[in-house]
Length: 106
Image (tube, rainbow, N blue to C red; front, side, top):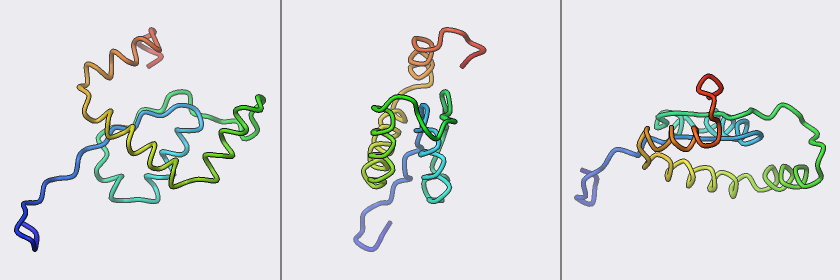
């Protein structure tokens, strides 16, 4: 119990599912926030982004926007991760199966 008599509950275990540059954003957030790292159940990086200068202008704009608004990006990542943490392993596997049919590629 905390000071106001309410019972404390354990923080949710988070699942991070990231793609491309999001892989690096998730990694950076977790390295900088030990509380989130300790409460992370799983991290799934899909196609980690390795280019620092994307070819398409729309990708450049998205990267610049994400890097210029880290608190917004963090909120989006946290909300998405929280929603994914409510999914069963089977549901997550089904989502991945639809996107990446090759079992060895997942």
